[in-house]
Image (cartoon, rainbow, N blue to C red):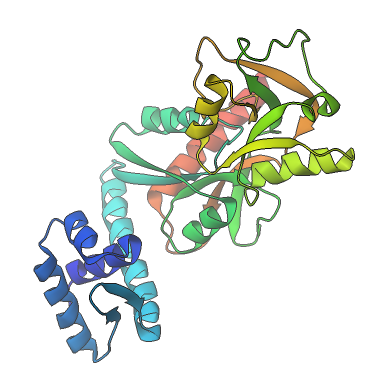
Amino acid sequence: MDIKQLKFLVALDETRHFGQAAARCHVTQPTLSMRLRQLEEELGLELVRRGQRFEGFSAEGERILAWARSLLAAEDGLLAEAAACRGQLVGTLRLGVVPLAAFDPMHLVSLFAEHHPSLNFQLHALSSEQIIEGLGRNQLDLGLSYLDRLDRQHFACLELGEARMGLLFSPRHFPFSSNSLSWEELATVPLGLLSSGMHFRQSIDHSFRARGLSPRVRLQTDAVHQLTRAVSAGLCCSIMPLQSGDWPAAPHLRLLPIEDAHTLAPMGLIRRRGAPDSPLAQACFSAAEQWLAHHALDR
């Protein structure tokens, strides 16, 4: 058994396709398949269900896969720890971000890059549940997510402030003249919103229901860029965080505050507690903690 076989196994889980897993690992598909069969023979277990294409993992394969992830995370941690002992911080920080986060993730990435110039970054757009799962399985180093359902015993967090909402619209199609809008006014406007299972959408639905209102939902999607394109085309307006890096600062779009509009929970930076502890996550979390403390003193 070697570390490459474990990387092949994890790549297959993430892509769910033999060819894509081979391409990700920079080997041919026959090589990847052969090495996985050698791993199965060495362990005496069938790990992968095969037909004409990938059909999933066996129950035993799922258990081995969890160990493979832990070993790969330990290898990453070992290399990062060795670099830290040399006075360096190198590697790739994996950051999960919820759609329409009320805190621009680029603020954090820029902060981390300033403190640790050798770092690279991977950003993943995920739901709150997927971020918690990814942190728990060591697939992510940090998460930018909502804090309402966070288990504080297993996860540390830095609260980043309240997420307030505004209406994104095109003045060419919706000539609002006021400086803010009420939920009653929003109920008459065609809206493009995130899919109903997402946290930001749940906060919007709650605000309408609490006032006995029903929104005019013209478009639903799980892709933020589709919302902004629909707004630009005049198909609808959309409810967005007032502070966010998700929507472009297009000159023809405006963001108007909504009265008494905020998400059901604050936004926060999250990291997993306990071993194996990522030096990258620890260093970047500490940098964010210092940055927040400094800005709190400035206010």
